[in-house]
Structures are given as structure tokens and as C-alpha cells.
Image (cartoon, rainbow, N blue to C red):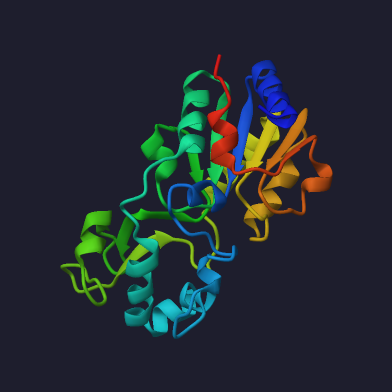
Length: 241
């Protein structure tokens, strides 16, 4: 165990109001590609750039193209929670972790057992008809072809926040409450490049800010503890007591 991980263990041992804020890097060790790394979605070749495909305008104008990309790259049902997801759920069960705030849409935190999860960007496991509001699950979308439609004829849209769309106010308010009350905030697996999600960190005024990320982030200078290692490897060494 490195000195940095030992220090993280001490911080976790000494506090019982911890909040975790995570991004795509938390799920890469589960086999889900992130957006900005060398192998991420932004560096793969499609007819349109991924950031264009994942916009509200594109979804409305070219739903067929949107769903080609969406089924190919966003509906991953083979991924399993990794050491980071599992340890966070264990910390919550032990009463130490009060909330997970995630930019991911893959449901892996819930699969691992986390109860209090604020999904800033929604989830591929929830889908709704744009016309009547009917709910459709992950399996329905995975099995669908073309533009998925409700029995009423309306287009089914994933409950995922696309570019140009606003975040859910209830989710934002819950995340802000958790962050503002936290003694410790652990930021992991995120470049902190996506706003307004990244700006939520400004509400933290607790004892220790921990950043765990392989590459540099804008918050490194503010961190009380900086660990540049894969987050799953780091959390696999933590003991919950």
C-alpha cells in the first residue's frame, strides 16, 4: 500500500460523513469506455462526432442515427461492478458514505448495492415515451430495432441527459445538500471537464478533499490528498471498519 492510499485509509477511518463524486473513469475498469481517453468514445470513428450524436438537436433530427450509436456504445449489459463500486457500497452500508454522485448512466453503483445515488446524467435503465410517458426498461431498448416506439406510437427516449438538455433539479438539489454537509469529498475517475456537473464541487467546505484520477484535473491544486492511480486498484486496498 502506497503512502497516499494509507493516508486515504486514515481519512476514511476518521470520518463518517463521506461523499463520492465520480465519472467515467470509475466504470472503465468494468469495461465501459470513457469519453476522453485515448480509447474513449471521442476518439472512435463514426459518421458524426459522438458529442454531436449525443445532443438533443441530433436526437430530434436524426433519431435513426442516434439509436444506431446508442445501441452500439451506450447499452452495455455485460459490465459488472468493479472494486470501486463494491467498496463504495460497503462504505455506505457501514454508515461512512452518505451519497454517491455520479456522471455515469450505467447503473453499476446500484448493481453493487449503493442505495443513495444521485445520477446527474440519468440512466440507460430508464426510458420513457415522449408522447404518453410510458416506462420501458433496459431489455426492451436492447431488443428494439430502428427508432423504438411506444404502443401509442410515440418515440421512446432514454432518461439520459443529452447535450443541450438541463440537469434534473431534484437530483441537483440532493447532490448539493450531500456535498455541502460532507466532512470528506472523494472525487474519482473524472476529468471534471463536464459542466454544470463539475461545478457542484464548489459546494464542498469540509475537512478533506481527495482526488483519485490517473490524469490531471482542475481540482488537483485544491486537493488535500491526490492519488494518480486507477480508482479500482485504490479502493481494493481500503479496509472498511
